[in-house]
Image (cartoon, rainbow, N blue to C red):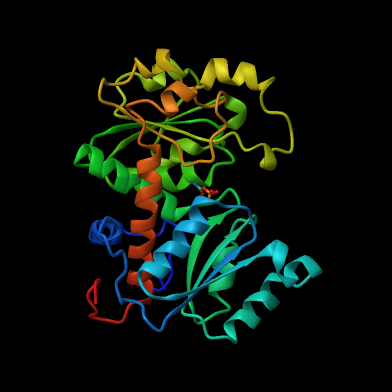
Length: 310
Ligand code: CP
């Protein structure tokens, strides 16, 4: 079960995480070649099933599949029979009848990919489920940090923003702790889930203190679409306390890197000067996304004993 699907980081062991990251290195080089295509998944079918909006994840899974020579089909809720009321289970059963090898699913309900995995023989990849997890985002973040810093062990990583609603924060907290980083989470108390300390993270509500001596500042998007209530007075007030600008950036180590999973609310959680500045690796994260998703598709759908590039 663990090796057939990628449903979350919480149940992944460290060895498997490192395998994803090391394999992504191979595919990172492929994506920088003149001819960015290998025959690895020829004859395999990948269905991208997106019930929520996405730019980076959906596009990079499509590019990843195509660079591996798989046949890739994109299904989104608005253009499919989901908009006519078809259930998730019926949708999956109908797609299953077309014999895909991999189902990549993004859904607003936490646990939807786990449910799908029980009703298909295909491999299932969680491309973000509700407020639960976004495992390939955490893998691409770790890949980016490792390439920038050489290793993740003992780094101080400060994750700031709407932690309660963030599947990115949850997956990263699990993954970075497993790889030996010291993780701090920071945000308004109203955006901090009770018991978050159990993930082994340190909790802050003062951004300057949380940023002090950090190697990595990872900013989270304010997720207005998941907020049932007003959790902060105004965007301006939030930005003043928890937005990353030059003043707080100066509290981190001089060679600290700045990350954001996207999409960014410029001027709210991050100052454009910092987002586009020399310490930002935000577009490196996007490039890493293709390599990590190629690695994921290969490790889940490749034949036993097959090498990554043939
Ligand atoms: N980081 C991320 O999941 O971006 P998208 O919503 O654009 O896929």
